[in-house]
Length: 507
Image 1 (cartoon, rainbow, N blue to C red):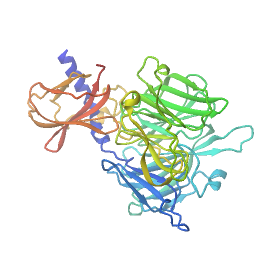
Image 2: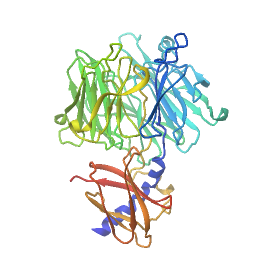
Image 3: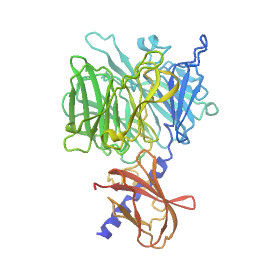
Image 4: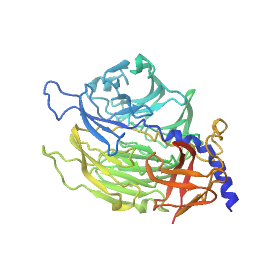
């Protein structure tokens, strides 16, 4: 059995690119709020920023001349320094100036009407680094239509805009703009992505309107590939909501709030990071009059959170009966701020610090925070209106995928295994058992030394660190950890000597 475990660990060496993924801080700068109103010069208006480069995150006020609405995307370099952001109509550099050729996104009547405020499309844009490039970013964004005869509001065109941050001394330039990717009757917003099993490329799914069909796109170093349409599960009515992948990329979830009469639909799918295919569709109906809501999944990929204006629900994605696992983890406490507005529960976003933040559809300064989303029930510790921004904010919450997801260890579909070095670090150090429960053993052979053992979750958050002397069969007792997948690093003299995936099994 020990030999078998050692072989499995050796297979896991293809996960070595994970250490690179953990350093990617593309989502460390969160932007909120309105443009600075120079006619009023009121300190409660302007832009708020949450910077996750520190712990706790730094929250501050900053002047700018761009309004942010439902479409909000910002992206940083790998060190967490802001590069650019968009409100779905313009692309803006880190100096808060419209980037060269950065105006005129999503051309049409909606953009003309909302030019001042920003594009009104939940998850209406997505920013991804072009694989193997240190300067090119792909901005995928969607035009919506409300005036098509015999059709309700829907997405009409999925566009690609390319940005080269190597231009203009690092201020960037839009080098192509509004290139049509898909022309069809599409769902509104819901732009999200997850890493291919190779840890380099990106899968993007986008649903057709009122359908069980999804366009499947793959972003590689050569650009976007259209892998056609897949049909899965039962008919899923299209509404307004959010779509997300779990942090480990194994689940895809979409919330569609259709109408007061029809209700809302929570759709959950298994996702294959090798093929880009969905399967095992589960659909849950919420027959209520709620017209706003969102979804997020915990860092360990176990717990799904759904907001519904005055309620927040938790589902256990590992349960035999997911629908039966539904638990109410928050009921709005009736709080109103000093100007008489109440911060309800609206959109959600998992942050680099492992917490989930929830905004409001009202113009308030408050965000709600789920502090321990990996925990079941009320132990998730949802604190209502516990984080206050310096300025008022309505609707805006940035849209990010999990940039730090690495390759799927041992996957036969990992097309990059031949390109990944297996000589970097101490390959003679083996870890077992894996999956583990209370302890692990490192077999150092001839690699003995004083190492730092660091354990991160799948979004790159460090959750445990221990100094350990490794020689032959060194046992390390693990702390109490939620069941799930983790990334470990062994550091010697400031250099990562070993990295891999550690699975904590059921206890």
